Image (cartoon, rainbow, N blue to C red; front, top):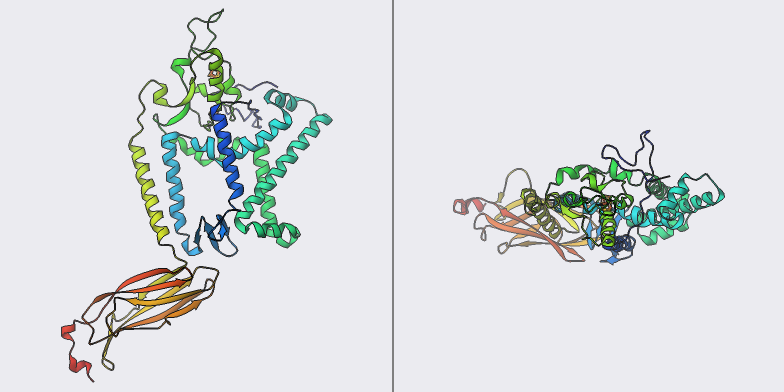
Length: 474
Ligand code: SF4
Ligand code: SF4
């Protein structure tokens, strides 16, 4: 079975009859390969370590669906805080737009979990068991023998085991490690839902990485589809220097005297994990992995020619024109990114372990009570304890003149886990202290943690000059 040569008019990994053509990318080494491998190991290590790292008494990332609280790097979110997800998702989206406008599909080639697991885990296992690319192709074309069966069983068994581990680590983000251990010690029937999710994930991962592979990036991933709208001629991509490389061919010793630097050795094609020929120009299938850069650099080094025939560059740079780094779309994405980050940062500073709503009661804005010489305003306080532990709340009034009273809620009161309390609150200012409309503030402080929320409001009443003493004195 020989290497299938890519064509710009076809998807290499889909045969004409619609079946899946299995790629066997050749081994490659070089500076980008090493850097990507190190980075991938760091990312995989981070994925495995996050459930073990404790921040503020919780795992660094713990999406505790059962208790309806979500812990992210020391911040705790309740379902009432889900609106913050809007900023997080749009922030991530703008970051991706920004990075793509500047650096193309850097995310795909270097940091996407799918690429990381496929290239640095599953393909490594395949390389280890089935050998290098030519050996793998031979094995695929060979008839079934005990040796081939044994290799296939070993490979797919390992794929299954790795998928099971990844699925369990994923599950620990939702149930925490100690609970995951205890669930694993029980019978599957005792935790049917969790067991079903882990099994589903395992089969999905196995199917994706053992069979579907690069097809996900080529056919399914929406980011791959929208990248053409996010990039332009100034975006840094991986490209082939046509000016320098063409016409392809071997120089001297019977070769063409006018040949460019590309010797048409096809190394860049052999190492491509999506089966394309980068010399055909920027293509949707390119995930920016830089394998072809390292492969071609090695060829150039062997020939004693400058490296960089295939390199990170903008399409303008490859065409010999200057690259404009700062351009309208970069300004726009930068502005959106900064706005999103500011909004998220501000929202995080407002995050409290409780939710306070403080509104004036409908009806008359104030009431002058002649029976005890006071002006009265009434409000509704709604307080929700967002935590799964009880919390004590202290309620105080700030900026009030002498003799002002606050009635309704007790100064100290406790709410149980995720309990809500709605109470009518009355603020009364004695006639003698009343000087007209004045700003006041209601402060609620939670214990433990001493986190406060302040609601400023205006105490309303009649014009003091119009208040008739005789009216107030019954
Ligand atoms: S063309 Fe190069 S950078 Fe793009 S996917 Fe193939 S090997 Fe990776
Ligand atoms: S590896 Fe370099 S020299 Fe070989 S075919 Fe690709 S671009 Fe040409």
